[in-house]
Length: 236
Image (tube, rainbow, N blue to C red; front, side, top):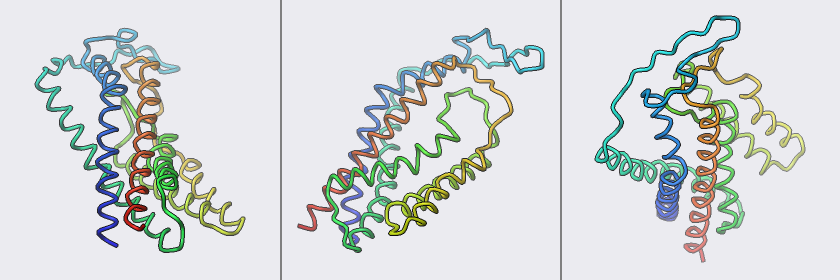
């Protein structure tokens, strides 16, 4: 069983990591690099002025930095590929452990069912938490990192429990309880500052959020599909 879990997770993690890195280079990295231009002061949006309702406009202090060199970008992109493979392999181990539990209870595991598992993982780990803490461009002020991490972990765990209750519960009240688990972190609310002070244009930030989530969705789907396919191949 362990060999089956490890093999499925390894293939799934490598496939998802490579796909995620390629899609990031194509869709996310250009937006991220442009965001860094605003962070370093190479570009300015509204001349770096922060406007808070009820207060006079206050200048935003921006430290001008040297843009990254070609060699630094190569190293960064190489680290991106490596970290994507490592991170998605870790996620795949957790995903395949869930698949193994379902398989031991009699549920059939195929590439198609694996995609569903992958999409459920995407919802729990990235989409649902993003409803409270969305991906942010460099230079975006945010609330205390510890508070944000605590809320993110709570949202992920609550969403996982909620989805499990909805998917495997055989009574209506289990589904209602599952929906309550999913909603609870958002009812409590994610930690945010009381004002907005990003240095990048809001259109660029919105593009970064949408592309980040789209890349994540595709990566989780391929991870689940490959995991299910490899698992099925080892059981027939």
